Length: 346
Image (tube, rainbow, N blue to C red):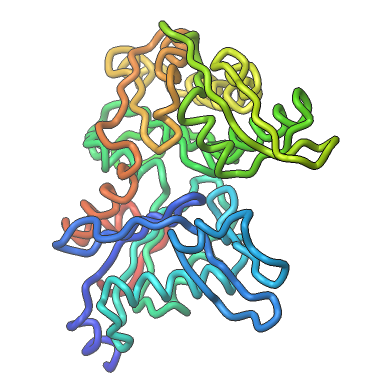
């Protein structure tokens, strides 16, 4: 009864608990928060020092006793305790520090997670103060977010490429007909750039520098005008700072392996799609969402590899959280139908 009464004063929320960023949608208000999924912790006292953007600014710059942790890896919880603290911080933040509220929370999770990983997400949200938790598969949330008619008897193909995972799914009649989830995304592309700089130049660069290289000169397909940029790092031979120049052609070759895995996941899903739905996908094409889908030339690469029309979401970073928000603001029956587990009340 107490939970019910407190719930009346709560704003129910939807959370895109991403590997790189966490986005929060408040019922009736829209997206109210976007922060990096990073937590800074003092190793000596186990005390949380910073969360979100402030913690991300510490990546690679902390003294020995402070560590900047990314508690989400490949779209799932890698550090349960830190994730719980991060969720509690953001839930309290969107409720203006009202600690007694217990909202209903809708969370997106990768379609390929195990039962143990689902339970970890649910438990973290409940420990952080959620009154009830609904889990929605990321490709379904992304499809709703980009406006696909997921409830119709038509083939809708969505490719959501985030920081930790790539979710490929064919959706029809409010269900996932076939899908593929691979733990490859923006992070793996960054790691490939870090490895290339180490192997080719004996230069050590950090995650933030690799991400900057990916955004500025990274590409998946030859560009009309190839770019170049200078980046700074530490020489592994001399130990001194050094600057080198890289080109988009060079970075494209460096990130070939993770991009090939994404393309293979899409082709595998298409091969397993029922013929009737496949025929409709030929006309409707593939819809892309997720922050990494904005990699230069990626749509051209997929168009070349599949021969299908490729449509990129207007705001790919927010497709998943907006899909969750639409379900939260909409009919309760739609939310229960698409949730992985049903609950007694809403």
